[in-house]
Image (tube, rainbow over all chains, first blue to last red; front, side, top):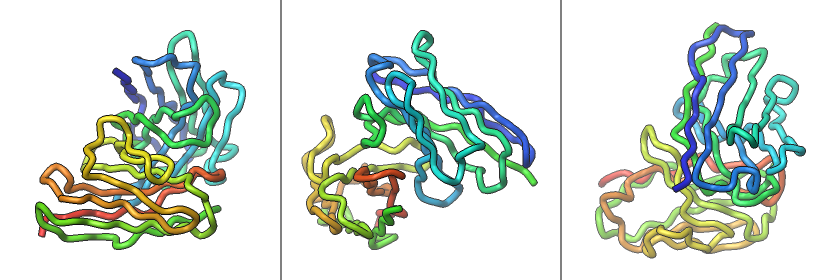
Length: 121
Length: 107
């Protein structure tokens, strides 16, 4: 059974940093790309970032490029998102999601329960 | 970026009703479209991929159709467990984008 468990969310001041983590199990981790998708309160889903199965290729939404860094540790089956220079508009539930392919850019077939990030001004 | 527009934004229906949700893309995405179901406080769940392919384990009352710029998700006979928000996602090109969601409410 595929399981994705996010951690690391919380309350942070504007301009601060936070690292989200996602522990993955139930599938061959390095065979699949992984993504972070967020959902602001009362809003729709927004893709944030993706990383290829091998970890070599990373992709970012324009809204977070230069501030967020995605990474994965194949030895630990974990996915991370380092978020710097946080803004009020980054406030959202952040979901870790498994891609359906080794390469990013496909639909997400499994999602974690999400972790809430609140940026205070 | 490709814009995804869903309609309606809210839909009131009764158990047993046939429900149709529409998703329109701002440019052609061939059949690179997925549908997700989300309940309050829960993670999205994949229902349909490549416009009409039913994900394993999803009830057959769900179906998807369309290509190019217009797509539909149909629930043939609405069940109590189906009251939720449904979102479409295009994965034709980066950045991947989602529709704003359609909330299916109890009438």
